[in-house]
Image: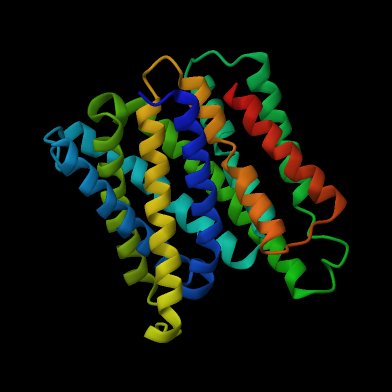
Length: 291
């Protein structure tokens, strides 16, 4: 049997790569199209996994579907905000901020009556300080469009972290106890897919759709990102409920380190000194909250 440590590390690797690939997908296709494509491929992968496990793809529990829809509304907002943040911002900054959604989940759980220890409180404070530090777009922020874009990206990333944190709290509180890991994730992803498609229809983007020659790279990135993020959910679901929940959660949160390293080493993004401090604090806040 695969250990919780191995599953947590696999989840971190899959999520880190998925977030890194989400940026080129968003810049080729736009935030809504990229999110829709990633969710479609992820939902298809989940459907295959359910078929292999002989699970019902459409549970009969009406209350569970209501929880799934509630989680999907929050998850859709979080996903769209994340892709928009990636489109206009700096990945090395966006990933740690969005990854702090665990602090939001912990805060909501604490407000709901769950105990939040000293490390959790410290993690929330550190995550908030990290957002303040990385909100600065660098010394040339006032003179360049890129600097302004990074500032906008921070706002979208904060919205994404808040929405995703609330989404995971709803999933853990009302959805997973009724359906379990993979079926619950499938129900939520299916609702999110429909909501994202509806958003795309309502927005009716003014710019024409990308031509196949320019749209194919974006679709390829979105497909890889969607499948990898779904694999990360599967690894996490397999690791939970085995007495190693804390290990799996903390190791999975290390995905932001992978994404940030890729952005700095491969994407050659540049950060100011305060932003470096903010990125480090964001990772520290995630780990403290998980512990």
